[in-house]
Amino acid sequence: EKAGYRHFMAKEIAEQPVVLADALREAGRDGTLSLAADLDFRDVDRLTLVACGTAYYACVVAKYWFEQVARLPVDVDIASEFRYRDPPLSPKSWAIFVSQSGETADTLAALRHAREQVARIVAVVNVPTSSIAREADAVLPIRAGVEVGVASTKAFTCQLATLLLMALKAGQDRGVLTAEQVAAHRADLAALPGLMNHALRLAEPIALLAEDLAEAQDILFLGRGAMYPLALEGALKLKEISYIHAEGYASGELKHGPIALIDARVPVIVMAPRDALFEKTVSNMQEVMARHGKVLLISDARGVAEAGAGCWRCLTLPEVPDLLAPILYAIPAQLLAYHTAVAKGTDVDQPRNLAKSVTVE
Ligand code: F6R
Image 1 (cartoon, rainbow, N blue to C red):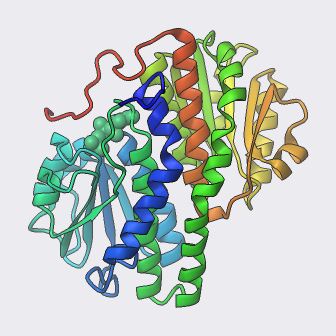
Image 2 (image 1 turned 45 degrees about the vertical axis):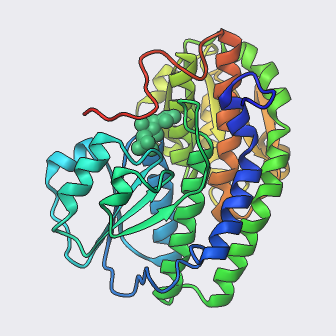
């Protein structure tokens, strides 16, 4: 059932282009792609996105999207914080709960907490028969298929795609995007599986440099804008399966503390497509290099040509429309974690102390 792969995680990383293409096709067939009229964002004044772990990082990416394409204010919260903080919620707001399993105890409790306070409870889940799906007013399936590896991979990219479709619908409903603009973004999304196939070719160079990463005590991930949550996700994935201490930071935060950690032994992984924020990120990267940090730059060909000099290593991804970059850059983040764990010989599919579905608080 691993289809020739050594681990479920490897299989689940590799199948993402097909899984995403199928998910989009099915969503087109049953109307989820357009979210029909059923989810009408015209009267919504605010969104609250709540989840745990990797699903939470998908929510942080979605905050950037909803703000940018729909000009809709978004709060993002970790479920275990949200449920006890008792934040004031607008009766015209929606609360969106994102969960692969649909059974995460804190996320379910957060949903119940929001129940009487918001206009609508929306579930974004992989398991449509789950508790979180059953208790929501509207359910959006991410259609990732069964995910066996404890480290979430294909569910993350499918969560992102579903949240992006929601953001586009919100943008159209609120008059921020025209129907033509939405159609253009959807066409970009339909082309994404092809770019993901290219990204998967990085498996080989990543397996080689993972031999070095496996020696590190600490690894930092940096990103700006919607690449910031990807830095957080890259660090989480790496620490949970390779047991190497890793932290994700917003690039601009570097000089507010973490730069003190930098020396020649600390690999710093910079996720930076050649977008409007690229130069800002590069200047943070140069601060790292000036302190002899070992920079691994992940960018596109233009980015690597402009800023690759002096880096320890560079990985080149295809160019991708800005909005979709977080989905594409998830692949090298996952491959780095996977191959580093393999180099260390850890139990990739069943990391110590972790469960696939966290049904206790
Ligand atoms: C990390 C990972 C976890 C889950 C988290 C939420 O790779 O898998 O952080 O994302 O436990 O689980 P779900 O999405 O099932 O609510």
